[in-house]
Image (cartoon, rainbow, N blue to C red):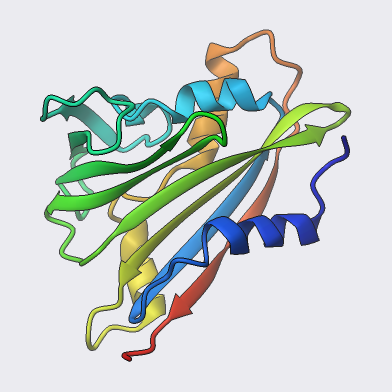
Length: 199
């Protein structure tokens, strides 16, 4: 197995993150290559009941329905640290795939003030410095409100604590998994994809 190329990465983004954008929505994608096996990264990302493993701005999370955390339909309420523009969000698990390493949620409550917010993380096996690694692809999609541009919306989102902190995820993995090889992580800037048709 060889390292995932830029072209292969773009194809994965198109396949899993850009093909379900509804009319009137925008999405943003960020990626990170982590020098840790995919099973290790998944053990952190899969915890719908503990998003603090990769969202550093969360202070508390509780499951508020009677569905177990790794089952689609499970609902959690998360509280955000003071100083962010969002104080609380209520999120429902819409994707959970242990075989293909995918997890996603949709916003169903809270004070974000935006419609149809959905987030998805997919993991893909990679090779980093000759060792098993993981390509993490994270995205969100959300409606673009009337009178607001996409760039304004994405700037607003940066202050809401709704975006996965991939740097924090990397730090947590290496802090809690000390036997991993020394880190050499490649990050790539976020990209924007949009569909603003009103048809």
